[in-house]
Length: 164
Image (cartoon, rainbow, N blue to C red; front, side, top):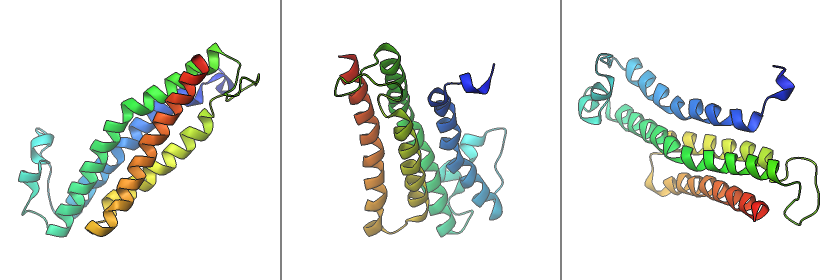
């Protein structure tokens, strides 16, 4: 199969899943760099906050928790992102009309722009989640979360508008 026949928006779904687990990998790496050994026979238990707390410096523990929370939130956003991508692909295949009912050739829903913007926002979200420990600055993270969720919701709305 030639690469030009690939549906890249569809491939963005597993790409986002892989992106979603990067904070977990980072959390493990900072624990390991600080002498904490994960028990691979029972990794979830050995990575629970109760198992980790007190075995690494508190600043590392807090960063580890924020990284794990960022990973969990990425996975929580996955269903909405998948729905937005699939709805857009369906809308683009079913109709050749744009939002103003003008006939267009490709990217009717702005899916390419959505994917790039969503991934950039989620990257900024993860970086801010892991690195911002100050309550006053944590609203940056919350704002980025709202923008990302709003982008997905708006993308679904555009697809729904096309499909009628």
